[in-house]
Length: 134
Image (tube, rainbow, N blue to C red):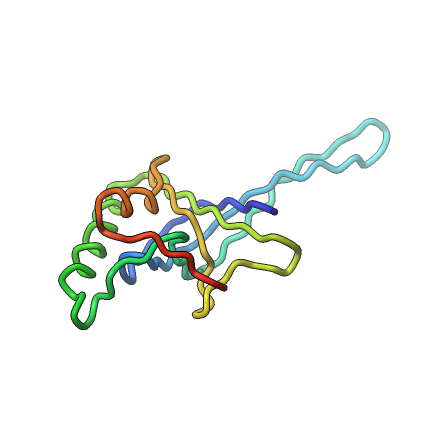
């Protein structure tokens, strides 16, 4: 399994378990150009994506669960606003096997200043455990 780590910015909270954000990753490449000369170069890549928090389900913000759904969304908005570092971790089992849900969102664990947002929502009763199939 391959693990991919990104830093998030410009976060929009769609509901308690779905975020849209700009994901940025940085890699350093070392090139040996001969004659004992090595060149180091930093590569940076950014993309705008929707991510679904892996392993949980929050109530919907419409219908019978509206009040609980809005409470979960408000909690996430507050946690994101207070965070200085947003880290997003996704995985894939094999090449080309990106973990997407049925709506095309990447399944992810989100960390806000080192704390798992996924675990926070579960432990504070804003979400229930749920495995999303891609």
